[in-house]
Amino acid sequence: MDYINILFDLDGTLTNPYKGITNSVKYALKKFDIIENNNERLKMFIGPPLEKSFMEYYDFDKNTVQKVIKYYREYFSEKGIYENILYEGIKNVLKKLNNRNKNCIIATSKPETFAIKIVQYFQIEQYFKHITGSNMEGTFIEKEDIIKHILEKYKLKKEITIMVGDRKYDIIGANKNRIDSVGVLYGYGTREELQQEKPTYLCNSVQELLQYF
Image (tube, rainbow, N blue to C red):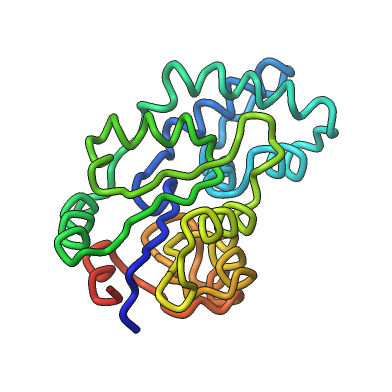
């Protein structure tokens, strides 16, 4: 399939945000007297919407979770956003895709304002036609909705559009919008997690991405 529109997840797909996200989560939890020293446990926060993770893993209710997220963003906006690493080879992949006249678009559950800052920080904004993320109010956070919004706003043909991401939420969002998907195994989703949602392709490395486009 000759894909023209390539939707990229951000965390775990383009960048490795492990340190920034885990530090932000620990900062927020500490405000509620929860001390979490196991960073590996906090890897589960990379990918899904924050609200879901805090409620599922630390039993915060609907009202309290917004306060937790506020503290999370307090740290993230100042420090965590820059405690991040661009995956080796990603810039080269994006450059080659642009040379092939592909439309690269970011589709992330991270607030759009943060996504833009991260892309600018790594100096890769010139490779993307559009950057779409969630809002700060928590009403537009599901990957399914974000993909749908992109498809409709930019009038993209589904048959030449594909979603690239490292977690099941990316694949579920693609499947619900009836577009193809690539599950990347160098991020934070396991092979089992991704295979369960039946991505169109599974990719082992950054360098391997180019063979699908």
